[in-house]
Image (cartoon, rainbow, N blue to C red):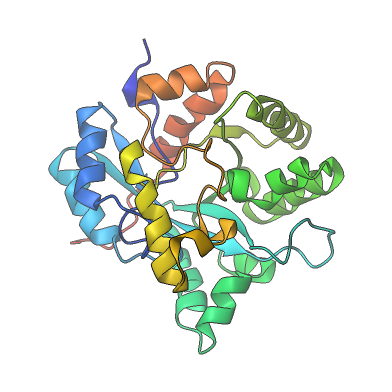
Length: 288
């Protein structure tokens, strides 16, 4: 039986991913505590609005909060990338101490505080932005919605390796390659990611993006996307959904036992979630 204290969720969205998540921070913290997790990350998209409330909710149930953020990143201009006109790639960034929190604040401000905010959000951060504000951060590539896996699914392993190398060039030993497993067809892609990581010395990490607590909450994500895009439900573009419109992709919380079964072929990647969590020092200012 899996020891829940050795693993955690590192890619988690709450209602503070505005019009993009359904779980409350209190609900996330309570679920983590009920299932025996000792750490939990919050990685809302482009924002840190929920960080303080999340930290307080976690501490109230003796769970260590990890402060993070999911960010959109433009493709490197020197690489041939698939579907650049659809959506930018994603990265998950976790703060290791106050320096990491300051870096997250600066990256969020580059997007949210820019006069041309909507264009910035649609394009994503530049790689120069990432390099300028990398202090104190762990970087997990964005899984199915990251550039690396998108390249692999487009059968361009060469560019995928270069993406991984560029991430490692910025975040060095704090770089991790995300494995997402939803169907049997995802296993070969995961094996390719592990091979790239082995070649470059970048460890894999098991990731299950959480946008809602229960499967029955998932349809609300389409409703939220329709509101965000001011369009009918049936007109929501796949790229506006966290599953890219694929009904086989799970977006809800998975229990430690389910995670262990799903990643049985990649135990080191699953164990890496706990290892990363234990390395993350408290990030929020004292007194919050």
